[in-house]
Picture: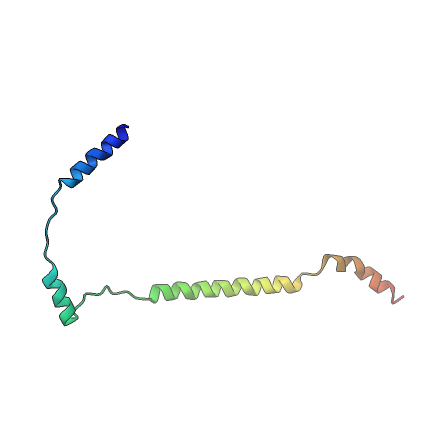
Length: 89
């Protein structure tokens, strides 16, 4: 119940607060009329470098995985390889 009383006190304190009134309409209207919007300068160079390095790393991993896949043989094939040779004799 103490928590509820604390919340009620916070609500009462928030209801009694006054807010600062700031008029920004002139500045907004000027930006809309002139189109002089200040845009942050964002470059895609770091993202492009990271994407390129990621692509290189992925292609290296893919190359290694394909090499390992082609070098891998079936476990049962090793069992039957002596039997295939014995048919020759």
